Image 1: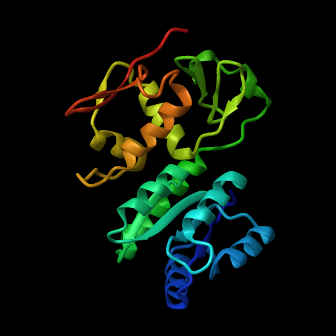
Image 2 (image 1 turned 180 degrees about the vertical axis):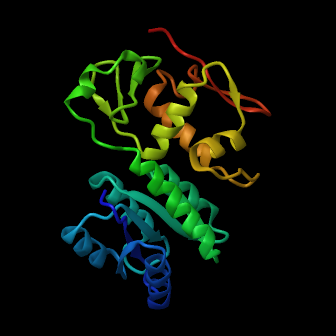
Length: 241
């Protein structure tokens, strides 16, 4: 990621594109806009941005399909923009691997805060020099049969193969792995990973934990590593080495 973060705004409404472009550029970001899937792919062919701000409801190929394409082919941050009541769309977007979501109508200051949060997490994914291989073992966290590398922000399975994770999923694993046997509320988890508070209608933590369980738990239906503490939150219980 360069010194000036770049953002691709994908929205079929020209007024929304113009507003977001002007607002984000006024806060120091490089902004490219696209009115749908074909224009988004053309923009990606020119340059891959640091973050994509993606509207869900668009004619033709919708935002959920485009988010799936982005997550499968590019290492970019994704913020989904949804209609205020479209809870299902938000859940599906997070299941696909979006980093965050924002409901319309939104306060531009909230948008800016979400953009900064996603980019801040992505910025921590820095490349290390050759000395990284000689770093001490404490820069790796054992998660049952998996291994989380804090230098490279990668998750590896028992056979050494890489398990793809998003930047948000890495932050969640790091938070749990560094606080074993400690109950963390949803509010604490969001504050530690995204610097924002949880509200009773926010299911983003639960959805991401469900995704992680499918990646690290031997039996996701009966989780042993990331356990639900009813009425309190979640707790990471280290598995055997």
